[in-house]
Image (cartoon, rainbow, N blue to C red; front, top):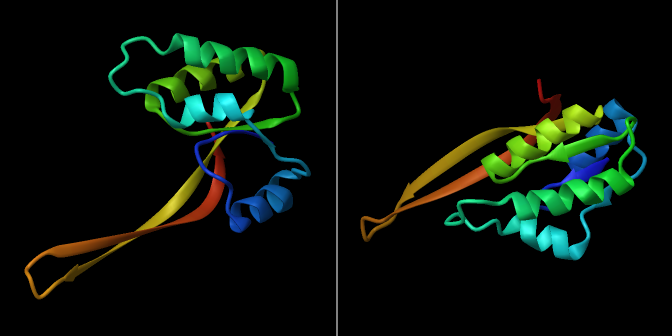
Length: 125
């Protein structure tokens, strides 16, 4: 599985990929591309230089049998999913269940804790 993803996979995500997708190797972006993907500037109008570098890297490392987990900035994700589909790569994403807990403090402030838990991988359609 090739990871175009801002985080490190959890143990549950790894187990799911192995058990349900038959994945036996996880390939993260090279450090320089990982930093760019994780910090896509929200004020930039054009991010094609970043997505272009990742597309070039994918052309070198990906095959049609690879799953490519693509999650991140919406526009960059859209561009890369379309690219993957045009090359016959299997673009997927991780679905999660989300729980929130609110605690009102004595000072009136509200603290919110959010828990995200992987559920399954899903194909982009």
